[in-house]
Length: 478
Image (cartoon, rainbow, N blue to C red; front, top):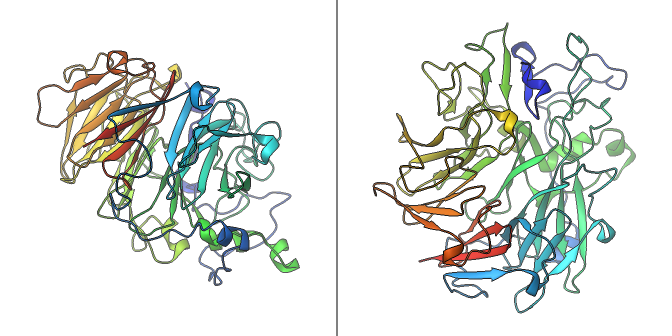
C-alpha cells in the first residue's frame, strides 16, 4: 500500500531530496534563490517583547530552586482551577507560568493565581477555520519569561498517483498555510499577543512542507532562547528573539529574506522505501514526535521511520545543511538497514518503526520509545537503548508495564526513565532494575490516558507535567 495515502507521511524521491531539491517549475515560483546567501544582521527585539521581559536569562538545571508551585510529590490541576477540558500538553516558562493546551483552548496559570486564564481565537490565537484543522491544538512549550509556543494541526496533502508535477506541499497547495504555530506573549494585565509562524522551507520558499507541529524543545541552558520544532515533515530551528515581519517594500517583495534571520527549516534523517537509498528509491520519513536536547549539545530526533542527532551551529542557516562537510547528523539511523537500522528492525526496509519519544540519561545512553495512536501506522516495537555503538531492546511488559504501546518517555536526572501509556498511566523504571513502578489511579492520578509529558528542569526538584484525561498532574521527583 502506498503510505502516502495512509496518513501524514512525508515521501520524496532521492534525487529531489527535501531541503536540497531544486525548485520545480510553477506559475508562482519565478525567481532564483541562493540557499547560502549571506544573512543580514537581525533586527533588535520588538518593543513589545522587551516590555514583556522575554529575554532568556542564563539558567542552569535547578537554578530556580523549588519555584513558586507546591513541592508535594503529586499536585492536581483540574476544573477547580478553571481547566474546562482535558489537557493535551503542559509546560512552564522561565517566569514559571504554567501553560496548558486542550482540544479547545490555551490556558495559563500565573504564580500566585488560583485560576487559569483561558484563550481562544477570540483572543488572537491563529486557530480554527482558515488556520487549522480539527483537532486544532497539538502541544505547548514554555519559552522565556511570559512566553509560550503553541503548536497546531493541519491535514496533509499528497499528489495523485502517477502525477509528475508536484502540487502538494508547495505554494500552490490550498493547505500550504494551514497549521504551524504561534508565539504567545503574556502581558502583565493577563492579555496575550500571538505572532503566527507560517513556517516554510528555508532553502526554497516555494515549498511549504512543515504543517502539523508534533514536538518542541526550548533551550533554557546551552544556547538560551533557541527553539526546536518537530513536525509532520522535518525539524526546524527558531530564534524567537529575532522574529520580525518584513517592513520595507524590498523586504515585502522577498519575505523569506527576513524569515531567514530568525528560523531555518528543516532537517530530517531518512530511510528509503524497500531498500538502501539510491537514486531510484523514495526517501521516507516524517512525524517527529520525539525531540530532546542532550547535555552534550546534540539535538536528538525520532520519527516514523528514522532517527538521528544534529549539532548546533553559530550561523543559523548552516544548521540545515545536514551533510558533510557542513553539519552532518551525528549519527543518523535508518539507511541502510543492515548496517544502520532505524533503532528497531521492521520487516521491510523503510516501513514505520513508529518512534514516539527519545530521551538521554545522564550516562549518555539514548533511549527510544515506539508507539502509535492511529492504527494505520502499523506495529510498535517497545523500548530501545543506544550506548554509542549498539542497540539493546527492552519489552515494557517485562519491565512491569501492562501496555506495550509507549507514547511518552522522559529521563530524570538520576537516570530513571518515566514512560507514558495511552491507557495505563505511567511507569518509572531505573535501567538495571528488574522492574519499574507503575503510577496509576491508585496513586492519585485522575485518569490513566497520558498526554504529552514535559519535564521542567529549571526547578529543583524537577517538575514533570503529565496531562491526563482527568486533569493536569505535576509530579516532583527528588
